[in-house]
Image (cartoon, rainbow, N blue to C red; front, side, top):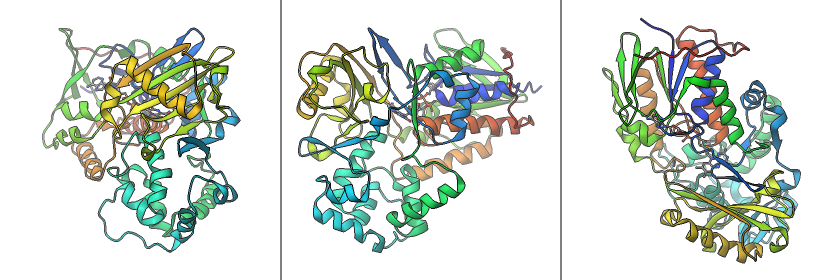
Length: 476
Ligand SMILES: Cc1cc2nc3c(=O)[nH]c(=O)nc-3n(C[C@H](O)[C@H](O)[C@H](O)COP(=O)(O)OP(=O)(O)OC[C@H]3O[C@@H](n4cnc5c(N)ncnc54)[C@H](O)[C@@H]3O)c2cc1C
């Protein structure tokens, strides 16, 4: 018999958001989390007045669904928008951080690009659209439209900052769909940016460039801890799901490790874990294509190194969001966030916090070095680029062995496979950073939208009830 309960696999932001939104509709949920804590890659560590974000640092408010979750969780008073002076961004060129231009006048004057590269930009509207359907890499696309220097000094560092990825392997259509769509729709990125901005204004949408960034007083952990609190016993930690089987009630979920096996019947299942784990999930149902190809999705490791210094030990004004470092500059780090400029409360008085990232597709082996080496590599770059001297007053590093899924050329076929699996397995839903976009905002919206789709499949109104139901645990 169907019991209308939903199994959510994974307690990252995608799974927690979906669970909370289902619970608000009065639908019982169980969240199965393999690890001992909620949040997935979100992890904030508070120590001696410093706050280190090991994973993501901020959310871009690109959708009203994001603000509405914060409001429904009662977290509006604890939300911190980024400081206005953190709008400035730096790119490293010639061993120095150089402010990125924010206007046409600034672009014409900036030393970041040569006169030849600037001239090349004005020719961009006359470059023809790509012919054919083949997926093009970000590097091919950028060199074709904007030239090699833009790839080296603008797009390569941006790709490192967003994906920790390699522009020669990422698919422009899958990883930067808006860029690809600008070319398809307007025939030019420059024309598309201008005309697209007018259209967005008409539709009251916010672009990623102009969206507000936020976090919370105790970091992003506040968001996932509050979701956990609201969900209470519905979250089952240390419960890896290895197998799901289609059953008369819907789906039988088999979870548990180290001897504590749990079996429960659910009407629907949402997989909100990672691509690698989805590839390994044993799905026992007739006619469902194998998800084994998802094991090919590359997740290069990334290490975050958070260092606290006395203010007087840093020569740079740290008046911005941070700096990105192009590959051609041959540094150890991909970039550094000026974390204590971005949000208040990240460092005690008279101190600053800097967060550097190492590894990614550019240099995967470096991310796996021991904590002492990671801190030393980050400090070498900080000494050279920001004039940092003295010993750190705080240091914390964390390695994500499988950090960010890379939407490399060929990912389009993987996306189609996921759609086919959902179409052939009624009641099985797939959502998260391995499918719906890699940012925190994308994941949160994916969780929200998955809850709407699941509620509709169960015949429950898509309207959110504004009260929270106590979850009913369904165990067999
Ligand atoms: C170092 C780093 C920095 C980042 N910085 C930013 C940033 O500043 N801004 C931004 O917008 N985005 C950032 N991102 C990206 C963003 O954080 C992620 O895309 C997002 O948090 C993914 O959430 P998720 O819930 O989909 O997946 P995850 O956070 O990976 O959570 C998945 C969860 O599922 C669990 N799980 C997997 N398989 C199973 C199973 N079989 N059974 C039970 N549980 C399972 C895992 O243990 C995990 O807890 C960053 C990512 C990293 C790694």
